[in-house]
Structure formats: structure tokens, C-alpha cells
Amino acid sequence: MLAALKGFGINFTDRRVIVNLSPAEEKKHGPMFDVAMAIGILKCFGTLKGVIPDDTAFIGSLSLTGKVQSIRGILPAIMSAKKLGIKRLFIPYDCSVPIQEIEGLEIIYVEYLMELVDHLSGGGGLSIVPPITELAVDQASFAGVDFKEVIGQEKAKRALEIAAAGGHNVMMIGPPGCGKSLLAESFPSIMPMLELESQLENVSLYELANTSLSSLGRPPFRSPHHSTSAVSIIGGGSNPTPGEISLANHGVLFLDELAEFPKKTLDMLRQPLESGQVTISRAQATVTYPAKFLLLSAMNPCPCGYLGATTHYCTCSPKHVQAYQNKVSGPVQDRIDIILHLTPVNLQQERKEDAPSSSEIQKRVQSARDLQYKRHGKVCCNADLSIEEVRTMIPLTEEQKSFLQNRAVKENWSNRVQMKMHRLARTISDLRGEEAVSDEALWEAVTMRRGNSGLVKKKVVR
Image (cartoon, rainbow, N blue to C red; front, side):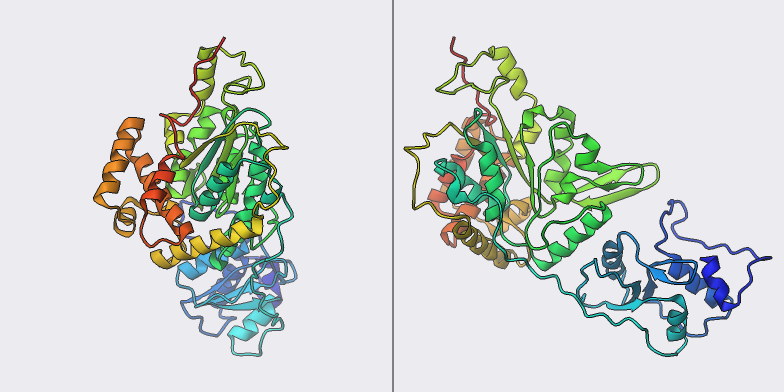
């Protein structure tokens, strides 16, 4: 930066320049504030005569020749500047970063420090006036597995449609070959397109993680292996970066072979699943990243995988079965809305030519989402509503409350699970286009979570 300032005739040979960056106790890294510091130094030395308003900010690094260069994380910096009340922002132009016209924030592109100083001093305009690139929703057809290609498992398809419509977490339990992975691969094809604000947030997260985003309009689908470290899933490092749960923001986090993940890693998901964000504290900094994802998981019912299967014999003892199922703790199960028990299907008998395609299901899901956005007055799914919002926006009749409470006592459900059944019933009614939660919708909701914990606990037959 000092080399770039020599072009203004300032000699730093016998001088010492001290720049205070607030807050002082937080360690700074990266060249993001090179331009801002250069402008401040030129102002102090009297080289820059113009008046700089308080609501003006500068972002960018400086080369030795005074060229303003782009930096990593420029889009998150722009969004943070807007939250801080900045009205005018000078940044380097980077064609690889999709920046649209942000309401209430004037973005001005700069190429060289010299022309920026001339502009602030009342001189001519800046050389770069690029066209504003808007983030367009990609409506291209999904290239993955279509729901029409999944044979059988009609109840599971129905449950996944409900999950996509309301943002509900799902756990699939079944022996190998019953279609768990295929259903998971098909699930992104019925997810609704992202709103513009969600796109900007996701682009910011992927830029911070230095990872490419496959599609702007479609929700992200992340599927980490069960050997992935906890830091990679939650986020962290010496300089904290977003993890898999943040990269799945406004999308799906698929955990295959859920019981094979370390129990400690699964328990780390409890707070993000509840709050929709994750806070990472390190010695150098404490950061909070959004992590509003839909958890889709799959697991076998026992170590060998064939407990309850009709074609194979289970070789696991009851003790081993219980130990395997206990790898998914009760608090994690409590945060699951839908628990599906799958069995293998007969590929010849179950084939249906008139099965709905992913595009047809997606239209129903999008219609249900639109009803929720209109009712809540914001981009918010039923699964994200607080307890107070559930009570005020999703009222139940006295008979429905009594039914839900009796079912909760019978199944030994916690208060959290009861509220999830409440939200789930509202989503089912939204898919049906009903103004109020119907008795049929509430019954269908409670049948999607069977048993004490939802996991198979059948006696092993010898």
C-alpha cells in the first residue's frame, strides 16, 4: 500500500504511519481495507481535498502500481456494509462475482487509486461502468434422478413432498436396497427455487469457503461422507470458514449411514437445527454463519442392516441392535419431524406408469410455500416458526389439541415433538389448499412418526 502511495509524492522514508482498525482486540487478516487506509492517509496528508461523507465506504486491495484489486469475500462485505448503514460503496470490479443492484446501496466500481482520488476531489468520473448483473433464477430442468423413476415407496414420496413443502427434517430407516439413497438423490428435484435474498446469502457463504456454487437458483445439496471431520461439517479452523451445514444453507444436508457418523459430530447439529445458525469461537475470532438447512438422513436398522427384512436373516443380537440405534441420541431424534420405515419393493409389481414426475410435485411444493410466505408475511417455512408463532398462526381446535396430547402421552413425545407435529399438520393442509388444519392432516402428521423414538425396536427372531 505504501508503494502505491508514492505516486502521490508522499515520502515515507523518515515517517511512521500508524492505522488503528477497530475493534483493536480482534486480529485482522487480508488486504480488504487497503483502499480505505490509503484514502485515510491521503486525507491526513492533505493530498485529498474532497469531503468524504460518513456513509461512504471503500473495499479492495492495492497492487504496487496503485491498481484496485478484488478480494476474497467481497459479496459478504457488501452485505455487511449495507447492514451498517453504508449508502455509497467503492469496490473493485470482479466479473466472477454476481452483484445485482442492491436497494439502498450505491455501488461504484474503481480500477485505480489515482482515478478514485480524482473523483473524490471533484474531478472526472471513473473509467469502469459495467452493466449491473442480476442474479437470475435458473429454471433449467434438474439433471439428477426424477421422482418418476423411483419405483414404489409411495408413502415415502408423499412424506418427502411434505418435507420439501414445509422444510421438515426427515430420517429414513430400512435395510439395504430399499431405496433410501435413490429417494435422497431424487429429493433435490422437488425442492422449490430460491428467493433472490437466499441466493445472495448462499453466494456469500460459498465465496467465504472458496467453493464454487453449482447453481444459483436451486437449493444446494450437500452429502458429506460419514468419515468427514466435525470441523468440516460444522465449520471452523484457525481462521473460521463455513462448514457443510452452512454450505447447505436454504438447501439440503444429506447424511447417509447416519449411525456411522461419530456421536459427538451428530450432537453438534443440535444447536444449528434449532436456531438456523452456527457460532464458531476461536482464539482469533468468533463468527456466526447461517445454517438453515433441511436435514435428510438415512440409516440401517441394525449393524448387519437386515433387522425386519423379509429376504435376509438378521445376525445381530438385541444388545448390538440397541447399541447401534443409540448412536443417534434422543435429542437428535427429537429434532427430526418425519421418520420413515422403508422395506424393499417388488420392482415388477410396484411399477406405475402414471406416477407423478418431479416437475409436477415441485409445482405443488411451490404452491404450498407461496401460501406459507403469504401467511407469515416473510420468506419462512412452517418448520421455522417459533412456538409463539405456531400458537398464533396455526390454531388447533380443542378436539385436535386433545388428540395430539393423548397421542403424545401414548408415544412418550416431548413438547418439541408435539410442536413439530403441529407444524407438520399445517404443511399437509397447505398442500391440500385448506385454510385451517384439518383432522385428516393432523392424523397424517402423527402417523409419520411411529414408535417411541422412531427407530425400529423389534425383537430379533432366532
